[in-house]
Image (cartoon, rainbow, N blue to C red):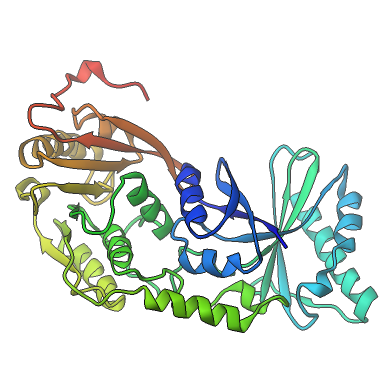
Length: 389
């Protein structure tokens, strides 16, 4: 039996997420602004949660219906056979989001869906599950558009970018699924040299190393689907066993990271050590302006500072043209990807990007700039000829 799912992701990554999900067995992917709808058998939740690096969650659709007001939502939500999906001994939480919905209060909708689930259990079993605002066993997601209400059960639990361990981070770290999506947009593949010359906590490096070693990102954590009535322990154990068989032995990889600041490099080193990746990645404390390319060709990807690590914007305005000079002089044969939340600073690199991709780091609109560093190409642009935003 085919089920319907939705996988939210950072805005801008739906296209590469659809490709990833299809490779995992998803059918009929429909990319949207901030996620992908798809279909497949229920067991697909095991593969998608275990292997997706780009999705934030895997949501299983259990109901969709037209509504006009909160009473309609309550009545239809109560008709869902919640008792077939989880037991009355489980705790749950409702999360509600809307786009162009006519309802006046999302909090009231949340309350009505909660009441509907409780009343369904009470009417069918004479007892009801409890609500838990922190660490619930299960999460129910309610999404409203102008005319339709969709109810999902969250098969992930904690967001998928939480890989099962707590990382040491600096200021404004990238979420792991955003970093993985950027690597996919960049076209990086295992075996291709990768350099992050301002690596901070090392998120790009650890994601690339795990991909190279064939490690499933969800192998160390638990999931929401394990508390659903349809959970099949044997199927899950087989999925884990398949993932383990695809893992490769530890070996040094052509993955390189550096940073000007020792304390940030210490964060990266500790994160790699905690993830058992320290032997795979080469780290060096060095100023980017003095860095040489570690291979004849490869992909450079970085999230340079825009106001924190290197000081005020005036200092950064001097640094970005130097970054462009270094890329041009020392990285011929490489393709550079610069992720920036400040288009004014990115423009100061003074190289002609071959591609711009709009992405979002949380609510912040950012751009991923691609620069193909070909000898004699990427000529310096005068400041007056700034590209349109």
